[in-house]
Image (cartoon, rainbow, N blue to C red; front, side, top):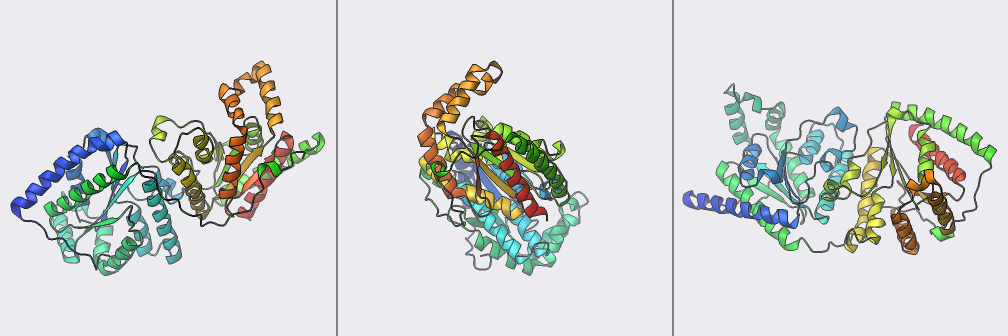
Length: 489
């Protein structure tokens, strides 16, 4: 892509100045439209060291109200970030609706740098490229404008700039070891960068190769390309996105109505098994920490099905320093202003730790679907997006365990009435619970579709028959211990 690019002709003198001025004014006007239409804008600046990315960011943001943009320069990956999935540090920084984020280098520099320095093999590199393609597509499918620039200069020009910076004691700090290495291995870097740009160039998130030999010319290219992309986003922001076919292997699952709910466990057997399984889980927690294996457990189920008691029996066995329970309620305003998976990427555990979600990302295809909190296109698209999210976690090495806690309608009514009539349990029942009960059939249909479309081989659903809560607790503990054993032995 870099070798075969078609270079634009740089305008001269008054034309160059006039076009820069016009582009600045255009961007200044567009920022208010971006805010009004609540379009989040992510501008990724990549390219050769000393190519002038920082300077151009400074020039562009002069035209935007400082309340509506943020500039992030990603430093070297920290130890904490290395204990999270590859995409985590990027996903957690995406902008809110109506705001701009300018990234001074990002996932391209990180991934190609690891590959060039032989810290990432070819197979792992290709997996990460595919992750990036999905990440960028998910953003654009969910209304983000992603604009990607690669600042290109020649080898001689880069060396000239490096030498010039090194000659001044006040600027030599701006030359990194990476810049020097890059210039010495310019041809090798050129080949890798060109291939990366080709592999991640998509209609919804194309690359713009900026001729960065001349500063004013580089600024004009960025301003005009950004303005054009914003105009296109404003025109197309309400259009539905084509649905993608699932490409991940699925596990065949029964419908909820086909699951017998008469399973039960005797009190004596329950206590014996509870003690045995909790002791075993405690031992496994130590081992998974030593082996740095992350675990993600997601609970979904009917109201009053027994999720809380089930979670409690698992956490009783764990070292409190090594797990966290995330009760997921309605999203806060700052969460609603971002991609719906943002608040879950923000809660992914470190390696060796366990994250338990009491409700999860599946709200997108249940409550958000049925209550009209998102469009039909949004929730239909979410099945594939969720499978992709869980694939990222699985490729990272996480144990993913998903429980649907199942009861029948009569059992739910009995438990609702018990809560209503017991003062110390009354806080557990709300008007919303009663309203949701009236939509039982609609919810059941949605759950059946959810389970069928998201029970993948790397993250299958497990049904917990919970008319007998004790039986469900034992079953959950068995599944958790068995799945962790597979990962640590």
